[in-house]
Every structure is written in structure tokens, then in C-alpha cells.
Image 1 (cartoon, one colour):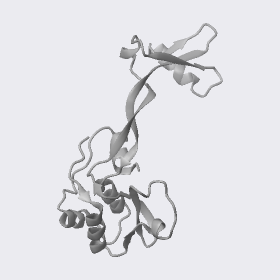
Image 2: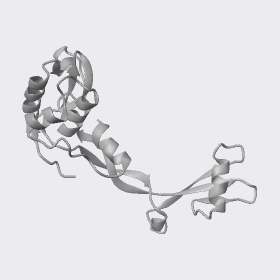
Image 3: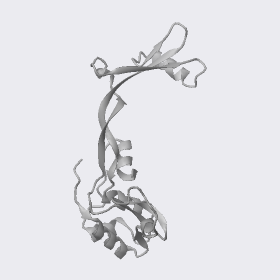
Image 4: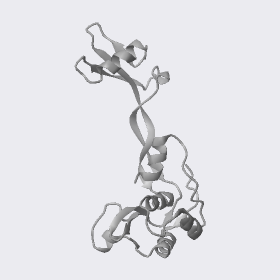
Length: 186
């Protein structure tokens, strides 16, 4: 995903303090507390209460993630590929998932097979793939949305839009889990 508009963290700090002077930054580091990411992130606080994290230096508009190789579930259309394994899990009649698994067998779902002894096998194709890892940078949109969710005095979409010259009505799009991670994940 492109980084969008970049705003320096010093500009963000100054602007947020102008909007609400009770917002402060880096409280833990200023008190000598150590955080493993303090060289690249700082805390945003309101009256001593931590609101969220914010990047240091140039802050991209959108989150930036690591890309890692991890074993992950893949679709059945990839099941015949050489690098795909099929994991199986036995669902026994005393398992809470059993009725659901039986219904999936009756619906002829490829992921479920009933065995002669009445147990059900849940099959899952998996392979090593590049996937999104941990967050490298949280982005200014994440910081602004976290402040808005807290309903802080004078911190409004309009105030942020005017102070930083950004469109605060723009919103990430995609499946719900991606939108949530765009806005909340640190």
C-alpha cells in the first residue's frame, strides 16, 4: 500500500498541542522508562493516560507492515501444488464442533470428510506464503483516528483537517478485518 502523504512527527506534535494543549508525547521516555520501540515510536498521552503510539520522524499516512514468510491456509484451488500440505484435524462426536462438521460433510464441503467410525476429518490446505507481519510504522491516520475515538476536547475531524490540510473523511476500504487493522493495530 502506498504511504500516502507524509507528515513529520514534529509537525504533528506541534499541531496536536495547538488543537489541545493537554495532549503530550513521550511521557514514558521522558521519565526514563524503556520501551523496545522507543527509537521509532513514541506514546501519545492525554492527562497522563496513554492514547496510542505515534511514529517518530517522517510519518506515512497509512500503516506500513513487514512482509514475512509464514505457513498459512491457502485455497483448495492450490491443493495440488507441490509446496502445499494438507493438515487434518479429527473432530470426534464429543467435540463441540462435531455437529457443525457433520453438516459441512452433508453439504459436500471438501474441507470435511466423515470416516467409517463416525469421526469427521477437517482438512486444511496450507503452504508457506508471504504475508503481512508486524506493523513497522503506524501512520498519522492511525494516530488521528485513535484520538478521535477518545472524544478528546477540541479534537475533531474538522480541526485535524484544517490544522494539517488533510481529508479526515477519507477512510480505509476493504474487508472489515483489514479496515480494523488499518485503524487500530500498532
